[in-house]
Length: 81
Image 1 (cartoon, rainbow, N blue to C red):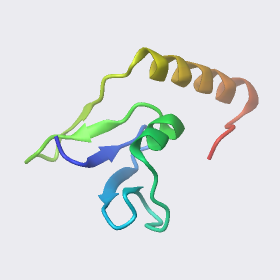
Image 2: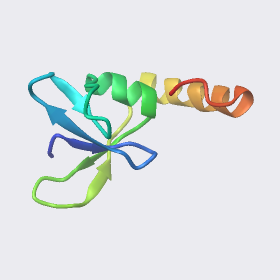
Image 3: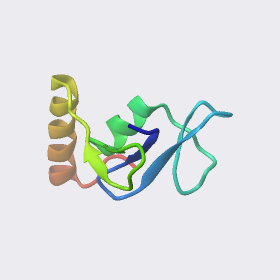
Image 4: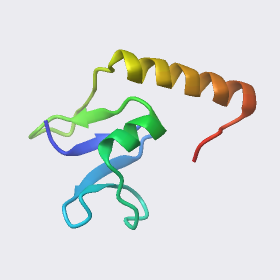
């Protein structure tokens, strides 16, 4: 697997060694991959030597956090950016 991830919204996150985090779009903010997972749900990771993305497995904690976040988003509108 590579250090390239894609979130549920289709944004691609790449490793930035100088900031020791993952960035997308703006290239100014680098986040730890755990924060990306928490904010944007389960990620897909790109297979090495391929352009294909495969879904990461979720831990029980990640699954529960995602379900709670999605339910809050559904009831209150999007509560995170």
